Length: 372
Image (cartoon, rainbow, N blue to C red; front, side, top):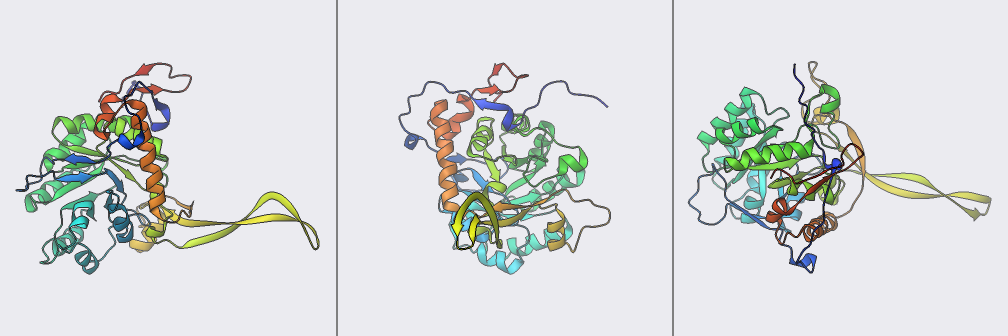
């Protein structure tokens, strides 16, 4: 046993210090990024990726076909849920739909059945996959890195997203095994209880800084996955060096997620005169069910229940119904543009070089520039 003495930080432990800027308006900020991926083999001379590097998570109620189609209109990316069947995926990734191919990832696990299903879709004559997200809760198993190697050897023309991990050395191992983009985050999500159930995790801001530093040294990329509850958190993740930011709870509760809309009635605290005297004013509020993919609800839906050797590492909550996702995206992108104007970054790609984090709280009274 050993203890690391240096302080690790979450998004709520820091703010971004404002500085002089030549930008006159949020309109001047460029959010689109171009990326070339380290292990992806292609004859294309153009950038492998061009878009706004925000991803919808492969969670029920978020990573749906409908969500993907809505987000790609604004240049955002989606990792689909794993539960779609072969036929639906083949139809969706038809080679005629180039926007989908460039902005949506097929998601899978690492079992034999997962790989066989992937091969059926990948080898189908009318489909073309560009991105595959290999997603497990614990990216530290030897089995996982070996699977990434096997997938890379079998599919050199696929961009591989792999995770989740939270340390630089494992980020490096996955990239050297064949991953192009590594997902960073264990336990920070709003419906994840891994830190409670297992005691395992890593403060998300520090994890992103460490993993981004490791990945960029090898020409790889990282996704900050989890822990963002506001546009400001997303901006902090980019400032910490994340190439992409993945969102679950912030994109839950929308029409495109497909969840059942539930109505509940609440007293407002006001009263009004009625025919039978004064009565409490009641208002209707709408909610959508949202749960972690390691929760009991997810296991019941996809795996026939929670296995006897496992415990639930996710929870189920109700999130406010938010209507169309386009309004949320506008608010999100507006917040990030505003961050860039405060930090003096005309392009999103410059934010990590322009940003200075200020530690907050009584125990944090110093200013430091992120190790980016």
